[in-house]
Image (cartoon, rainbow, N blue to C red; front, top):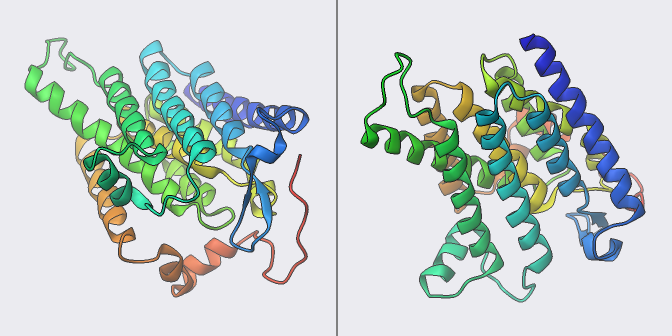
Length: 295
């Protein structure tokens, strides 16, 4: 039954992502032009992949979830990542030079709420709620846990969900990069016991549905899709991984986020042969002619 749940989650997520993207191509909220952005080549691409992927992950993870607790946790994390990410995608002020987590937090410290700052607050709140739902109040022996210990677990798990949401978004600078990174991380989790394996399988299914157009550079995840994938990945870790693994993943996510303020991920990837080959796999060659965006 566990294997069937995982296969079902991947299948539902892939189908829902494809159907949502097709529906958005026929009728995009606010019109197709609102979702177009310029990519690293200077070409127009559509961000409608983002909400489609978020819908796919939600559908696969919720429909196939083994219990209401895990379904609610993944839904809260994914919806917060998608909702506040899309708000930032569509509402960001192009004249605002503040970028990155440090820039948005700095604006908040000065009393200025940017769409990026609102995203940080919204995703963090959703992450904490998702962690609170996912963290059992009772131990394996059925006894109620100490409140301080439970709250500490919720805080670290919430931080992990928020950190992975931000990290995946930081990787979404080249076609397919965020999808590949998420899939590589989700693949072993798909075999993990518990509800996290179902959520990870949904991530794999949604990513498979979106990969072709993302690599062809007609679609991109945008903040909405990348934040949703990262938050769902964090929730999968919270639901399945033991505490030492969660703490290690949190430390890695925070470390990479801090490093991103000083070091270009793209420069590191391009200078590392193995990472460069993985990053370029399936992507449209540099000098290949462009394809028009969908929609």
